[in-house]
Image (cartoon, rainbow, N blue to C red; front, top):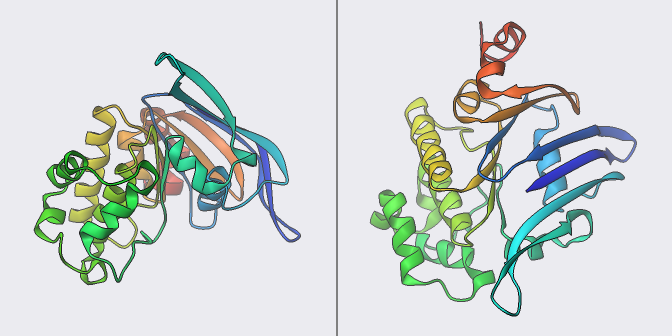
Length: 245
């Protein structure tokens, strides 16, 4: 579904991302783990077009209907696509820090998530409120007054309103209490079980590896290790570096 090939990203003269390559297959949860500053968020921003790579390729395969109503696969070059057009192709990005519309209500934030599809439908809103009952209780509340966990749920709900084929989550556990972290990861696991493909960027390696089908380890802008979630969780090197073992 997503293929990143040898991307290189610079901030002026600083070489931030160095020949990074990885793939996300349909139906997977793929995690990018690493310490703060390893390049995880920069990699995600490069995929979603907020940063342009100096070299390398990023391709995304979407399933679309042709004029006769038959489904077909269409491959897009994301390095040449404006970020706002990616949403209509099935990509959704839940950014680090949530970036919800603080002065809008919960309901208005969710409606904004459906902007590329037209008007938010009652069925879509009902689905989000079923997944996130807390949002239903606070649907008329100003988003800026929500707790950190509630804001994270809102950011995820807003992204889901666009019916993404690939959901990209950037540090969903950041700043949350251990109990809320568990709740957020339970929700991610439920979304995966329902068929959503997920690319998870996460500093909490322990939680990420528990739900990841495959994972990549970033250090100083390079991928230094890859494997299944279970393989990396059992790795002595990973345990010492990221899991406190």
